Image 1 (tube, helix red, strand yellow):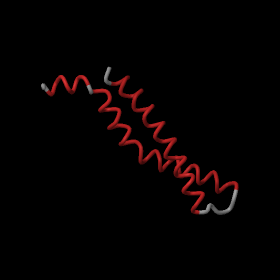
Image 2: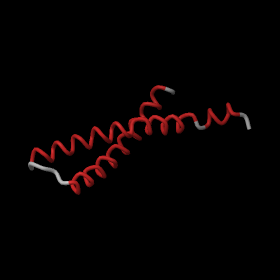
Image 3: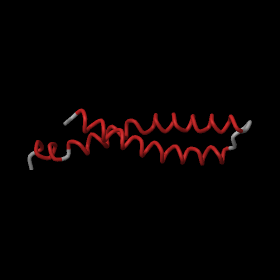
Image 4: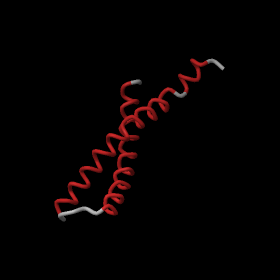
Length: 79
């Protein structure tokens, strides 16, 4: 199998996965910090259990956001 034909066939999905992975951790941290700060405005202290729940919400939001952004970016730049 020729590597060039493999690369052409899977060019976009490979770059979407790479870009999504690179963006996931900083975006998750940013969204989590925003969630925690919003929660701190309504109450004085945020418990560890609430932080875990907020981290799970931030993870789901960042996964969706990173995949959509990566797909749109790769489709615009590489095509």
